[in-house]
Length: 250
Image 1 (cartoon, rainbow, N blue to C red):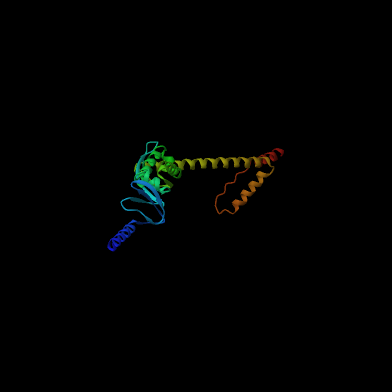
Image 2 (cartoon, rainbow, N blue to C red; image 1 turned 90 degrees about the vertical axis):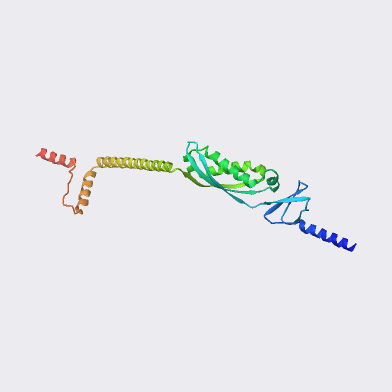
């Protein structure tokens, strides 16, 4: 009897020891009893009865998915290569195990297809200029689709957008032409402003008595400090007319 009791005690002890499972703070355990979902196991020591119960651990930390290069065609039929980084975490371990097989693989595939679809809806200029908006659209779609899986998508970042060599040359020429166009416009606007100012100055000199003479004297004063050998002086018509009037009186 003693041997039987000792053997039974050892057997129970072995069963208990083999039933102990450790769940880390950042994990949750999904426990099944005879194949049916039983409970969610929190952090600490937990018992899982062998042959009767099984469990799966789920990491609740934020995960990073590197979405590989995807060849996509934009709305204006330009082929681009694009890759991204996806940040997500499990918020419901039960749904992540029961509602989808290999949720990490499913999220990565969903991100790839969504990224190709979104790129196909925009033109190249919009894709290059509004990368944050495109990434936000991808994040919203992936997050909404993965809600039944107990997944929360925190962010999507577009890492790189690559173009063919000939397309890069075309974009470079386009940017150069745009800079030249802006330079011509700015120069023309400057000439218009200068012409208006000159017209205002001429009007002021013509309307004010003696202003033109003072301007002439000022010009001569400026020329006096010049070391050039030749000075050409323009004589205002008013002075010539004054000489004419004096000559007529004689």
